[in-house]
Image (cartoon, rainbow, N blue to C red; front, top):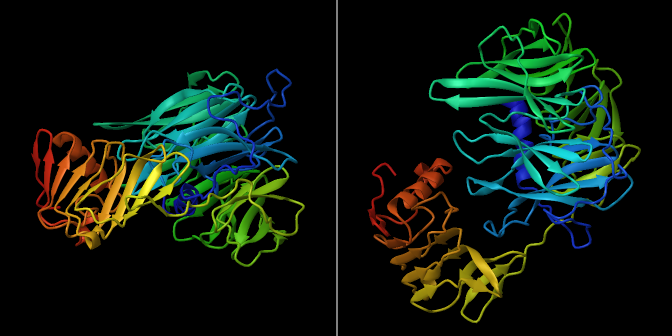
Length: 539
């Protein structure tokens, strides 16, 4: 899936770098504590209907990280509320909600991110509010074979638990896969013999799960798109990378499947609404193809800006033109007009459409809310931006940044031959070390203590010995040996086994293009607790 994936991935990457967190003046509720009162008056809400036509927002430009229900907007923002492993980076996905007419967002849950290519990555997708519960997809990890699981958060208690675990393909739970209070969910299992597919329906009121067994008439790979007008719509998948190339549907009440759009070209993404199928095809990145659900005939196309966010709500397509001009048109291509004029320097990267307002992400990676009756873009983000702490230097010459949860070492100005990185500064654990040119001090040895999760040493060719902790989980600059520019033959003493070091080495190699890098320590020696690890010849 290259283009809605291109659109989605640009949004996902933006969201994973989303420079937002709680402001000091924001109302918050700590994870695991009692959540704020809801509008139910103590009983179970009767949720508003959800479906492709009624749904006010979708995953096309938000990856399900914005949802609206029962007078509340739910959204995901990056935070720094985790354990400090990624000090200096946003290490949590924070789920907030904000009530219509109010200005303060409430924190519902904070979840740890995963690392990919040295950057903390989006973890939470597919928000589905339903009564007192909030369902969401969360990544199980990063890497081959890792997938997502569906969770259910009780917003009254703040507790959450898995509902369906371990799909090996992002399973696209979202609010347009719902009919009559049931979420239709797909699970893909990867085995040595290939992939197997399971289909479930989740009772959103109770969290109960039962099997859904559609008569698909094929054993080929499929993927649920949405539920609409009594049908479940599926992609057909094919080719080496199992990319979508056609659309069919099967009745919820049972019966044979039928082709809807039997095209053979690649599909980046699709949406079904108002008797129309809207498709983004390969090689047609700047337009949406419109097909008739009953006949499968192409009846038109909608021209939009390439690589700009858009969202489909009922019979209306909202989209961004240029930097930030918010436009709309009917799905038949008529009625194109400007909703809100753009503002210079305000480059919209996310567009969520809710009941009476829009949720926007700007080029400074902040979340904004704008009423649909507004005529100018908003000036103040919902969740305040985090400010990077100023660099300070302690009495031993260590330059550091003090974050809320931990400390990051970013330099050394001392003159010691042996540089012992402190374990704690100002009663906070040091979890990240990033040193540059400690050779100016003629340092020959660096000792990194247990507790440090991420470490790199740049331009330090006088250093001949480095002690590394077993707690090390990442080498932030293209892995080993490129994250350590030390003297040739430098000895790295790792406080773990060769198997543990190999696992760390493989992790970093998998997500860094080390082959293009000519820097790093030449002929390094890695001494583990149970032997000497040798650098592979093809490193």
